[in-house]
Length: 412
Image 1 (cartoon, rainbow, N blue to C red):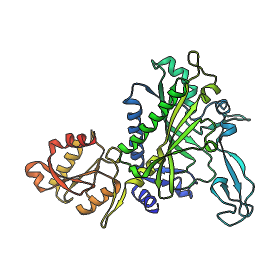
Image 2: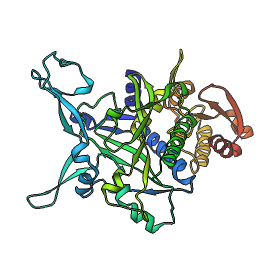
Image 3: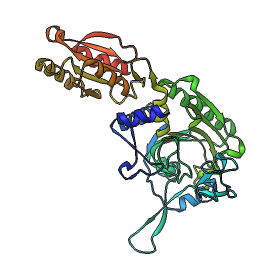
Image 4: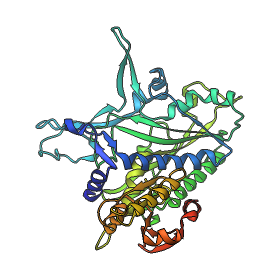
């Protein structure tokens, strides 16, 4: 895991939040390459879950909602973790993640008590200010807008509402890099079905398979993915049934997407009906940050000479890098700039003319760029360039005029 953390900092994927002031536990900043990776993950999810379907529409609800939302949903009472505190060093831990003694100093731990994960905020310009919450999950924004969506569109049950957005949890022990953070981003689908067991189970199985196939289609290793069903005593307060997609991370099998049968918990708590019944909900809830972390982990590869991020081309921050063979020949630089400008309107393209060509290749391998285009002396004569593949390091020559269609074809 240390190698992944080092690469993320060194190459501009992920930085500790507010690092110049010592950071703040559980908060992370995404650098120039990290924000591109996250945006690509979200773009592919939205395309798969919304654009390529006739039964799903999108939503972007507010982060702060009326506090009654969280009272009705049960989060003010049930959105909790078990908390213990060391009597000696006063460090706090989740009771289900430690033994009988403090892992930091060996001291005695207190009895477990419940700790609410909702993050409080206070609004208004006069005292007393209004107490509200940063949303602990993005889901509730969908439920309180259910009627608005139905009334303003032509959707009919079964249908879904998709959303991507930030959520906040006052985690007791954030850790494992970005895996457990206090600020994170979610990609969720709330899929509404008729209140029948057969129908709900059918859609539950359907969405399990669809979501697993999405990760596989973007290159994640099948042998590092599995489903794990929640025991009744570990299900969330709203779940009739729950299964996680887990990844075999360096720190063990860890969940990064949940498929939940929420039944009528949410709509009934908000007193919302559709026609003469309360729909049931099948939910898919994925963590953007966890997906990014596991895509990076899964793609990390070392050989004797280089580090390679074998990211799927659709997720790679840059699709193509363009180089002049040498930087001190104006005619090569000018031609390379022309190729760079030609590709920019349709592809995310990197430019690099520093150092020797081998070091430039290795630098692009390390950030996951699938293809490198080199303009050399032959280019000046026949208008062909060298295209190098990241994973195989093999090179082929292509006409400059054919580059757009070649790369776009590979990205389909």
